[in-house]
Image (cartoon, rainbow, N blue to C red):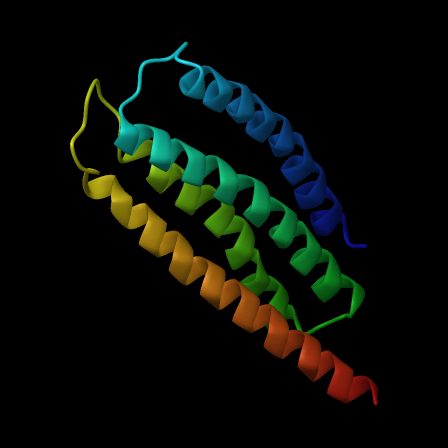
Length: 137
């Protein structure tokens, strides 16, 4: 594995500790320890779930692309999955800040930016893996 992949993978694994802490926050929200309205509860759940799933997906995609010796451009595009793991949860959490929001604020567009980043990431990785497979055969 390249040094860059090792460093990124290590940093992402450390970020999982932050996601775990987010789980304790979500537990406090759902048990009434932290005041939140229904909109906030829904968005907090979605943000936490997306963070966990996308971090794992991002790690798997990055390792697959690296292991397959896929073209460099596909590795760069595959990082879009890890960017999505930041953007989407940030959109969910930050768009409902405040004491009693009735609707998400403009930061909800981070969710859509994350969705675009995820799409670019998985398509880039998929095409890169197919390309590496064809070159190896």
